[in-house]
Image (cartoon, rainbow, N blue to C red; front, side, top):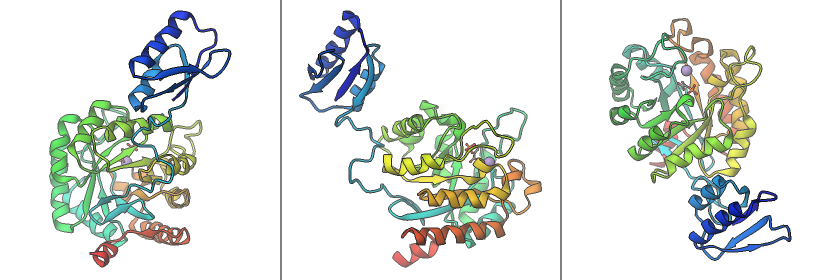
Length: 348
Ligand code: PEP
Ligand code: MN
C-alpha cells in the first residue's frame, strides 16, 4: 500500500500513522526525502486498513491500495459476475429487460401489465408496494396489500418480481414474494437496510442515489457484498442536475461505462426516472445499452393518466416493444445477447 501524507505533518500525527501501520503488521519506509510518500509492505493489505488510513488526519490520500481490493473491484482480467434471477440474466454479455408499473395499484391491472410486458420480452416485472415519495402526502404504495397482489401476479403470470424494500423490518415479508429486492435511490446510503437486505440472500437491485458519487454508490454495494451476498445489480437512474426543467434527472452514461470497467457487478439503466418523460425513455434506453448496460428497468402503464405515481414517465406497451427491439439490435451489434424466456427454455 502507498500513502501520501500531508505536507508539514506535526510529529504527533506522523507517529499516529506509523503506529497504526505497524499495528496492522506493515513495515514502513519513506520513498522521498520530504517524507511524504510512505510505502507499507510486509503483510497483505485489507480494505479495512485502507479505510482506516483514509480516516487518519495525517493521510492526504491512499495512492495505491495494493492488494487491499474491495469486493466490488474488478481485478485485472476478471470476468463479469453474472446475476441470474429466474429467466433474467445480467452480465457476461447477456442483458435483460425489467418492466412494469411504478407502483402496484390493483391485482387485475398488474396481471394485465405483467402479461403484456412478458410478451414484449421482459423477464422480470417491476412494481413497488412500498413507494419512497418525497412528500408524505403523496401516494405511499399499498404496503403489505401490494405485496399480496405481487404474490398473486407472480403465480398467475409466472414472471419473476422485483420490488423495493425501504424498511429493514419489512425485508422478511418482502422476500416471500420478491425474486429480487430493490433498494431505491433515497435509501442507497441507509447502511442498516443494506446489511439487512444483503443478509436476506436474494439478488439485489441497488439504485444510485440522485446525489451520490460513483464512489459512494460502489461503497453502498460494498455493504451488500460484505454480507457475503454476491448477487448485486447496480442501477444508474440519473443524478440531480442544474436543469430539471428539461429532464427529471441527468442520466450518467459516463458512470455506466466507468462502472463496467471498475466493477465486475452488472449494471442496468433506468431511463424512466432519468428522463421523467415518456418521450425520452426510448432514446435514453438506447444510450444506456450503448454505454454497456447489462439491462434496462422501465416503467410501463397501459393508461398512464390513471397511474397513481410517475404517470408522466410511463410508456405504453407499444413503446416498450420499440425499446425491446432497439435493445436486441444494439446488443447484437455489440456481440451480446438479450435474455428472453425462450433463451432460458432453449438452454434448459
Ligand atoms: C422506483 O424505481 O420505483 C423508484 C422509486 O426509483 P428511484 O429510487 O430511482 O427514485
Ligand atoms: Mn417510479
